[in-house]
Length: 180
Ligand SMILES: [Zn+2]
Image 1 (cartoon, rainbow, N blue to C red):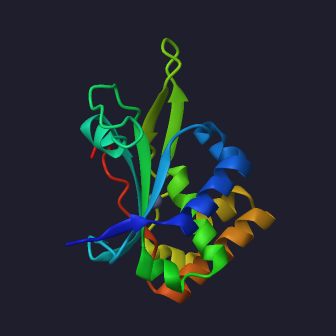
Image 2: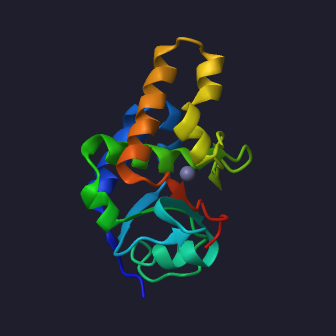
């Protein structure tokens, strides 16, 4: 059975990214919980380095019992839960920890309901898909082709090389399917 505990170290990086990274500005004011799981999950034979999911309905009520002093009838605010295996976290350096939390936050999308003003939370899929073997052989060729000679593309390609060389596993995760 998997054990979970609050991940203050992950939350610290997440809070900083939400406060300072313009890509995550829409998440300000949205409840995000960060959890360590004691061992990594696997998905399709790959180790899952992290996951982001939306929790709504009954899950949100149960997660919010303390705040509402046990009153389960109040309509619950949905939240995001980002979970990271603690064993993976311990072997990542600061840059990769930040990259991992940044990645998971990119899966979290919040918009406002025009009528109620309430946040509407959704999980966003990756906007870039590629085979690990192609990345190994050619680097980030699509990005490089789009921004020929661009420093950003070069930096990204280096970062991906680093991840592949270091972990020998491409970052894989399971964004979940919304409600838990
Ligand atoms: Zn992902």
